[in-house]
Amino acid sequence: MTRTDLAGQQFGRLTALRRDGHDTSGKTLWLFSCSCGGLVRARSEPVISGRQVSCGCHRAEVGRAHMQALHAAGVQKRPRSTETRAYMSFVRRRRELQRLGSQTSTRQYIDGQPAPL
Image (cartoon, rainbow, N blue to C red; front, side):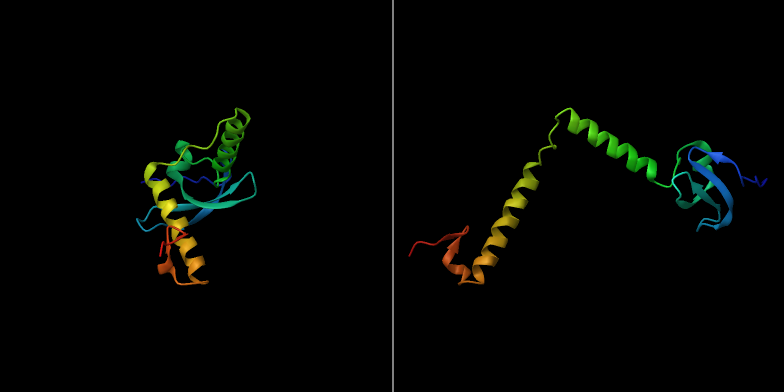
């Protein structure tokens, strides 16, 4: 197996600085400097192939741009699933009962309302 010296080469936003040890499977890790100023240790394979183009700043920028485009288009948040809504309703009731429990016994309340006598 030939060792390729990547030092000084640029791949996307990453510039290879030096070899930086090995990962748990024995693959060589490289220390890369990102154009944003960040440093990242990565295997050369995903960097050379283009699967990894930055230290993570590119993904954050793409996500931010996507959210700004959705906001500009007037798209609302995706509605929660029925299960999530039911769970959140349960959590809100439980918190309310806990709050009421600090004032009086929770046995006197059903769904946050005073129980009939």
